[in-house]
Image (cartoon, rainbow, N blue to C red; front, side, top):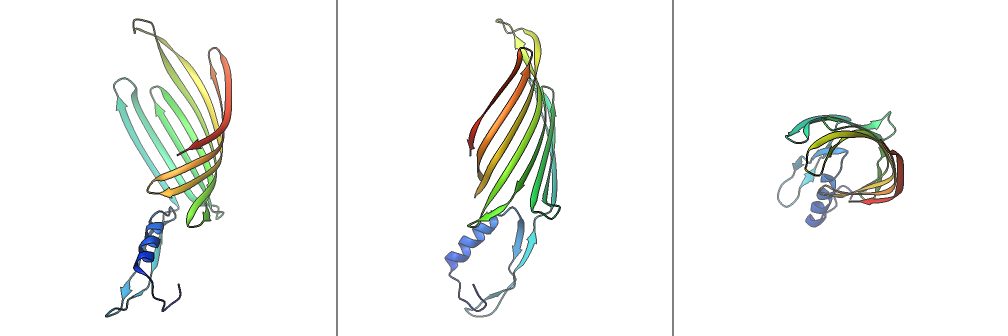
Length: 183
């Protein structure tokens, strides 16, 4: 649109909905002015924070406690790269996840080449036929993903690419890999 153009309400509504799905914009203040049937806007954009962090905890009687911390850095080194990390510690499972993605615009949607790596260690409880605890085994796991993510709005996101994993358990090491499609 150009200054002075008439804008159909349906199009304004559609574009505002698209804008609300953006991960890089936190808000837009329109600052309307005018009189009668004419209105002018002086929009100001409020960008999303470049660095975010969060944490939480949970407790379950059978699984024990779990605490997690996560961080997200947008526009790392001015390259438009997003770096994410998550550390989760619990009674049965500990894991560290690191990810990097590059947000690219594709018809108002974000198409993001993504790489993720997760390292985890889990204690798997063992039980006998009567349900009595007989100890546990420890499983170590490495998971890697490389592919694309696409945001569809309203919290929906698709991830497609290749995933590989390897894990060590008392009986030996195993690995698997393949194509992944996740909604």
